[in-house]
Amino acid sequence: MAIDNKTIDKLAKLSSLEVNEDRKETLIQELEEIVGFVENLNDIDVSHVDATFTTVEGGAMLREDVAVTNTQLSDEIIKNSPKSEDGYFIVPKIIE
Image 1 (tube, rainbow, N blue to C red):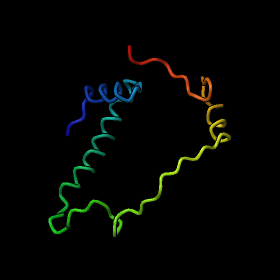
Image 2 (cartoon, rainbow, N blue to C red):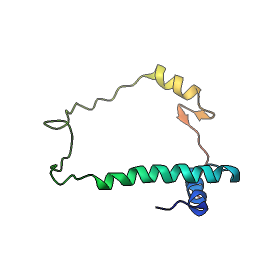
Image 3 (cartoon, rainbow, N blue to C red):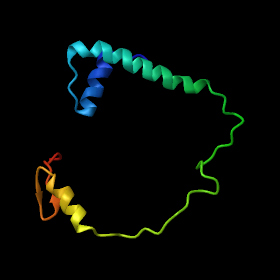
């Protein structure tokens, strides 16, 4: 897969990051190395490996889902928020 300036611009927009023009060439090279490494996985012969849903033998252990209220922890988290009201985060409206 070829990485070019158009791809970098699209990735920057999707990730809400600003990429300086002088950094783009280095970023292109780094991303091409990463994609090349991942493409190496296509060369691995897995025809002798059975398809599995989980790597844990016997399946994943399940536990009962129990709701726990820890107001002290909630208060600690909320106090680090730039805006909050009545124990909820206040975020900017993004959908009109």
